[in-house]
Image (cartoon, rainbow, N blue to C red; front, side):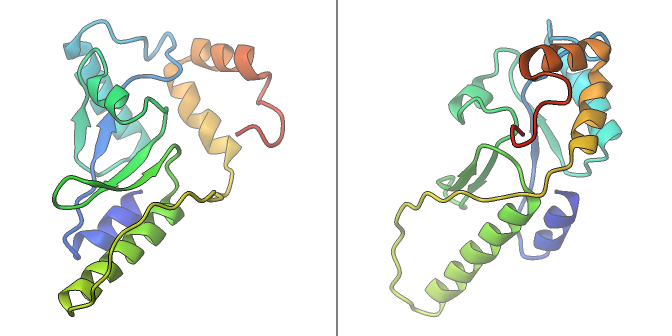
Length: 162
């Protein structure tokens, strides 16, 4: 997402990482018990995964996360009025870039006088899988995080269940 954020920043698109909670807490990154701990873990995760976007931290209770759907790795695109234009239950940089190109194109059409109106669409996007990177990030939480995940989905989960 760093690359997408950088590419669209010059077109006045803001990109933020919202740290909500640990989907798979472990002994190194445990479940949050206070806001100070959550802030420290957010900084640590941002550094470890190399995210350069500004990071916003949700409340300890997860109010923002709940408001936007409670999925573990969501992406939302909001227009300048704060209205959702895109929602994905999984972050994929290709899908996000595609959506941003589309919405920026619509804005250019409107500035040119086009009379366009929005409508809702549901589509299934596809992403390249990177199991190695997934487990690399999961292991940042500690062995307990990996064990919890494997208890739910099996060792390194079966093909197609990502």
